[in-house]
Structures are given as structure tokens and as C-alpha cells.
Image (cartoon, rainbow, N blue to C red; front, side, top):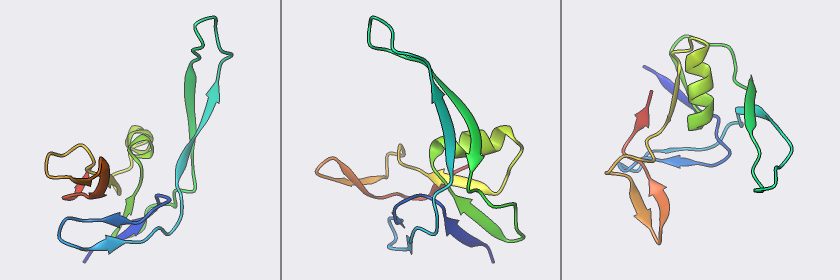
Length: 103
């Protein structure tokens, strides 16, 4: 059976009531250019930080940006909360639960 490890900074709750408390915070390092006259700058995404090496029967729950970066590196053991799915539950405009994960 697969174990899910939540590496986002907040608990993830599924629509069926299952909850995955935060166990860390995997993230992508960013660097920025100077702001131009239109008050805009460019961001360059760098390395993934605090994402453990793959482990047998472990799926890591990460943010969408970490998921994208990890997939670019060939990782298949990462998912992100399905926050854009139509079955995502919201209260007062805030996400309270998701139906599952995207990979």
C-alpha cells in the first residue's frame, strides 16, 4: 500500500475527509531580475529543495510548481493537490478540500 507524505506547508484535506498533515516543505528556489519601468520582473526557477530521494511505496504531495520541476527531472513519485478540479470544495472563496491529486 502506498504512503502519502505531504511536503506542502499546510494540511491537505480530501473531499472524503482524509487529511494529510504537513511533514515538510519542498520548494523550488527562484531568482528574479530587476523591476523595469512597468514594475515587472522575470523569475527563473532553480533547484528543488527538501524533496527526499524516491522511496519504495511513497508518494510525495508537493505544490504544483514543485511537481512541474520534479517531473522535468523524471520523478514519478510526486503529486499535487487537484486545486483546479471542478469537484474541489470551497468556502468563502477558499479551498477547504480537494477530490484527489494530479500527477
